[in-house]
Image 1 (tube, one colour):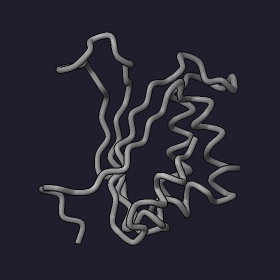
Image 2: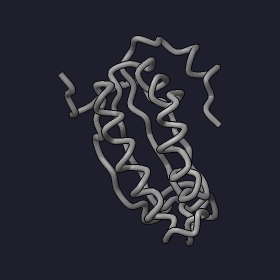
Image 3: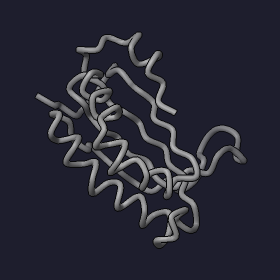
Length: 129
């Protein structure tokens, strides 16, 4: 569930990088392939939505092992870093009718667990401007 209250406490005009942690269902909940297949359908729809709001996908990768911390913690399958020029741009996308109708059903069908953490830059080698 989207934490609108928490996001609205942030500076809505500040840039944000969303750290996405995902664990997929073995089988998509809509019966159409694997959880990964459903996530790929989700991504094909959301990446243009992100770009239309000035954002970009910075990095994705497979989560391979817990290196530090509880070894029995949630096993993440995939990680993504997504840049948005403002928190407001992220909220605009996530609360849009087109996202809720076209994209989110694929995310829900594919992801057994999906956590998105809003981050503020402290240091980066990535330069967005």
